[in-house]
Length: 212
Image 1 (spheres, rainbow, N blue to C red):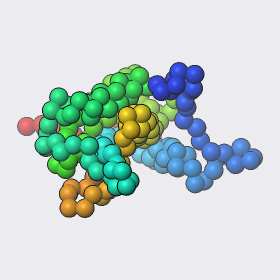
Image 2 (tube, rainbow, N blue to C red):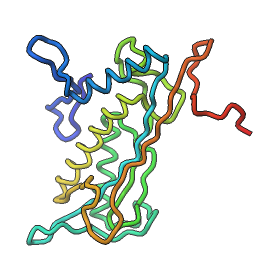
Image 3 (cartoon, helix red, strand yellow):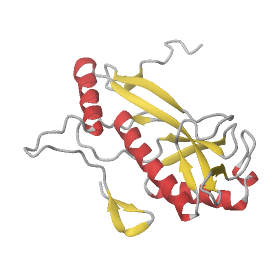
């Protein structure tokens, strides 16, 4: 599916897979390997892996000598409105750009270190048309997405955050430890497996049989 680049209306974006000259899949293409894994899980177990991500990142700027520094020193769980106005502008514009390409940010959190943030990517929009392949995409009764869609959206997420920051003279760092002496960045990863029951309704295999 072609998407309009929110930073350049004349440019289009799409996800693609790498092929060899003879048209066969390139074995080291990460998207192909993920698709292959999902297909194998479905064919062997009729199960759909579902993944949710909570990526952390730093919003940074640079001193005159090029040294990276945090843009501000927020407190843990600060709201957007408690950041300096220039930081708010970057964050709000990034969310608007993400929504424009159908990536839903369900929750935003200021993390422990200064200028460190965590945004949760969740399902909100109708599934993309990936064809009749249940291991690729389903209208899952859940807050997260099938694994391939989640990883596609994470690539969009990183691109849009970095591009938005650059337009404001700042940078986004997804590095694990960009600053010494403070918390580093991680990414909570939620993993579930869904399987159709006898009526074809998808059930979460990790759910308790008796919620009580």
